[in-house]
Image (cartoon, rainbow, N blue to C red; front, side):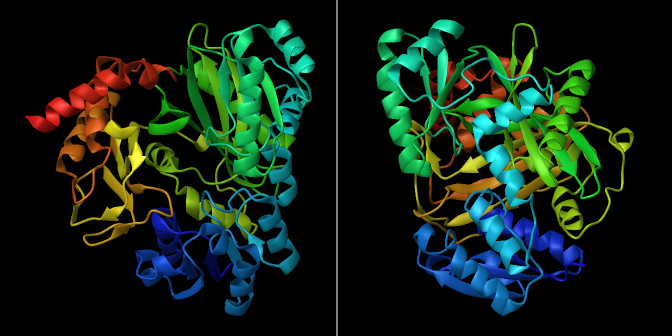
Length: 459
């Protein structure tokens, strides 16, 4: 049994894990950088240890220091949250070598699914549809041109390692191919230390649908339905919902079965997300990648299934059996999540660090706020600019949108600009209300949405 957990993270996900552990009577150990000394996760954990300076590579990314604290505090397990070391093969392996339970998949599973080419090959062998494209690393301009000649423009250049839109370029014309490859490769090297890229067919009118899976150590795998993450800007998700307004019961079953196949093919244990690109024209779907960690948007799946995903991560890590079969999982109602960031949409979404002079979140039935902020808290320039995740649940999608609009109006954050007005403009847009959002929606409508946002602010 896990009795004590070190949380190798900060912010709202650290608090989320602390709450889950508290409900399970598990002691928690926080780690923090010197600028996070007064953060809520430090105050609420049972123990807390400073592990370095503000720069992430000197603190939250320092595997040796985190393992040293874990051994000193005599923890049973480490929860990595999301971001930082959550999908690090080296970190998972360091935990394994130290005899500390890593609350996540094995280092082998992370390695298999973290490399996108190996992941595509694994999925293809398992019968999961993959996006047409070259199955290996592009090593020359000639190879790139030959690949594109076979699959046709437009194409997507993607980094083999990492994620979050880094090392990605869409190419529509042959004249831009080699330049885009150099740019993507350089960005991948800077972001992930790996310049390897590959090419696949780009599907311009598509939905980004992901399926939440949970797998135990005894061969049992279930999925918790899908989340629609099509509202994106530069491959960064803006808001998410569950279920998807686009997915039919038949498609949900097909994608769910494909996600379970993906988990089994990679010998996956723990919580994970299988991401698909879905054609808006004929609903054909293709495997994109698998995230081997808890997702930022996991709350919408929790809200529509009633399943605490973080608690189940911990239970699986200590060897428990899944308490349900697929037939026990039911989707009820609708849930939306808006990511409230300290960013200025009028200035290319530039993060805006600073102090929150007043913080008053909304409350009420079916409203959930996951946040580590309070009045007087500082948004640090060193880390992610997220202030809060605002989540709502209602019996229908229309009611959920209305509830989210009301909650956004009640959310008071003073001192720094936020993305709240943008979310209000988004949810008022007919395309969003009708559930017709594709991955190109924000790109094509951002200027109009910002104009609407400005008008609302000035009224």
